[in-house]
Image (tube, rainbow, N blue to C red; front, side, top):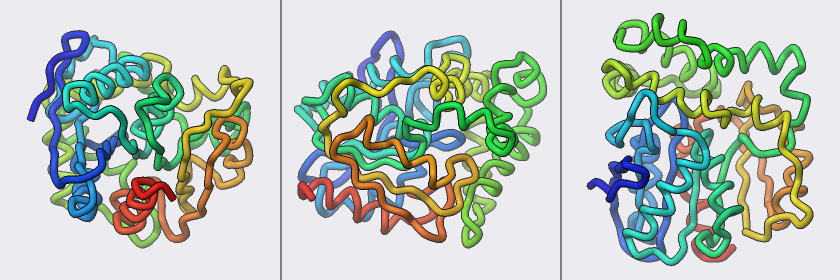
Length: 282
């Protein structure tokens, strides 16, 4: 299904199940199929909507378009409006986590609860430490025209590039299948698609750019938040969870052992259980 355009950009999405509204948001470098198993697990309890974010997958993706945080939030709000959802539980990882958090901050009446994995606010200048910079190099690379010349429109380069992150960011017990990498390569390899996906970083929405300027609100956001913090995410050490409460006044930070960055893909049962708990109101 496709949404009505917001700012000229329509979202492609899947919808399944019935019950309380749930929106699942994917990350980079993925698409809405990252949540396929989670959506199937929730379909008996919730009305589950899983969009490709603006600039990704089957959604509109102008290589020079606005795919940064504020635009992503506008698109999700537009989808909620179109579907007639007064509010929803919104869950996401990576980029999807940031969008869910910002949606709750800007439109608290539309978000019953969030279920998110890192990134969360509070990293601060720790993103500049040597170990962090060894991991976050790609966000600076994405700012360069060189990234387009080396990767965009080149299926073999796209596959190798995406495979690096899916293997490096995953936990030790998970390896992305060839079928998964083939699917994502098809999504990212057509000319302009890789460039559209890194519009998130070029718009200043990446962790490094945000961590250096973000300041906690005077009053932490009251939206209930279940934060699933993986053991083996090389981008986000667990000690970076120490300031989550400055932004979220009702945050329940839970360590997730044995899992890497891609929590909905690596541990869909656990992620779905947290969403189901948020739907039930804790």
